[in-house]
Image 1: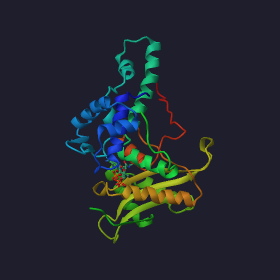
Image 2: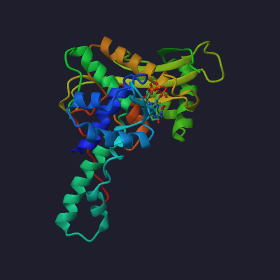
Image 3: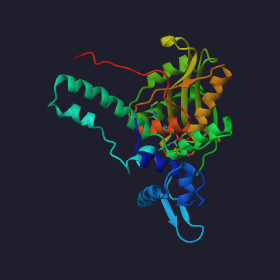
Image 4: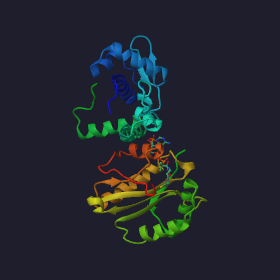
Length: 147
Length: 154
Ligand SMILES: CC(C)(COP(=O)(O)OP(=O)(O)OC[C@H]1O[C@@H](n2cnc3c(N)ncnc32)[C@H](O)[C@@H]1OP(=O)(O)O)[C@@H](O)C(=O)NCCC(=O)NCCS
């Protein structure tokens, strides 16, 4: 499964902010950390803001802070803000006007998509943060991701 | 509000409460099944079989059992090295989201660890978001086996 760059950035930015909900982080700070342009990130943050997951704070020292519920927001919730996740193959497998070979392949690809969706829909931001914390306990040196 | 609880091995007197909780959660009454589970998992081979309950502090209320978890060490199934399996797990709906599920899960992990086991497994319906989210939040990830099935009456 390949995620679009906006979805990946959104997840990284949310993990950065949700790790400390009191913290305000500027777009350029996040951009620098993950090596992406502030322009691209600004669009992502805007979408996250509209979804109520981040809050923008104006003025000097402003930026963004986390505004969602990390224990109830899943990776799928975030990804669906940026890309279509429903499976073309599952729709095709049900449509019925396919050749047998096309139908059989759609079945297989639909099965894979279904597992991917179920996995992304079960992992919350807070579960991701716990996973990151466990890793940095085991490997204190490097605990960040890059886009 | 958070409940004061203790986790301990199941006793015979817990059986009706466990069966009642299971019936409330699943909608299916199965007293014989629970009697059998008790005999097999709480009354013998208790070094490798664990039937644990979460009991409300005081323990004498109307609903003293607030949750249960059942698991066992299984070895060499499908060629697997010994591992701990959790196959029944429930928390009283009215006292969920207070950490009781996590306490039961941790207590079961500790039992397996004491038995020298390094891996714990369970099976979840992949569309059951609650179960999936719970086990993921406890650090479980997809294991190396996939469950497969076939409809036999086609
Ligand atoms: C799954 C279950 C055991 C969890 O018990 P619980 O006591 O509510 O769990 P906890 O309070 O310890 O929750 C631990 C973590 O699980 C996750 N979780 C629990 N309920 C959740 C929910 N409704 N949505 C999302 N995540 C949830 C959370 O990450 C939670 O941590 P958090 O509170 O810090 O966010 C309980 O919901 C249950 O019994 N479900 C029915 C089980 C069943 O059907 N059994 C019959 C077949 S065996």
